[in-house]
Structures are given as structure tokens and as C-alpha cells.
Length: 102
Image (cartoon, rainbow, N blue to C red; front, side, top):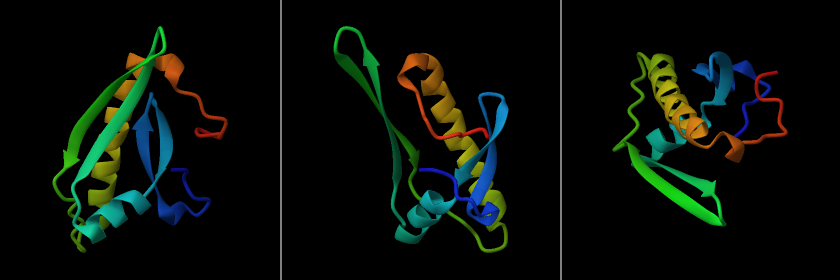
């Protein structure tokens, strides 16, 4: 999802060598639901085929009150690293008209 205009609803991670804002909402929602989190990527390959990747991200997102922001930042950075891995596998699959890096 897109980062919010409100800085408090974002966390800044390193992505492709730059600072990038990610929304905190998905991590808070997964924590609230006590739900496992899986990452799914579908990479288009020629001719007209998709390679599907599914991996476990966390059995449960734990956000302790004392260190909530640090925990969110750690999960978000881990997510950014996985996203970067797949973006590098198929760089022409990724486009976004949203000014992500501003």
C-alpha cells in the first residue's frame, strides 16, 4: 500500500539504496489479528507465463508496547529486503506511477 502523508503512519526503510516510506498499517493489522503473514510474488516471464513465489514472513507479528516502533521498523525493513530481492529478479515487472521516492 502507499505511504501516508502523515509521517507517524509511515516507517522509513532502505529500499534499492534509498530511504523509502512504508505504511505501518499492514504490520499493526497483522499484529491485531494474530495472523500469520505470507509474502506472495508473481513475476511475469516470457512467453506469457508467471512464476509464483510464496514464502512465510512471520508466524505472528509481535509488537510489544515498550518497543513498538522499533519492532515495526524491523519487520518493515525485512519486508523491504524481500521486495528488493524480487524486484531485482525481474526489474521490468515493477512499475509505479506513484512518486515513491519523492
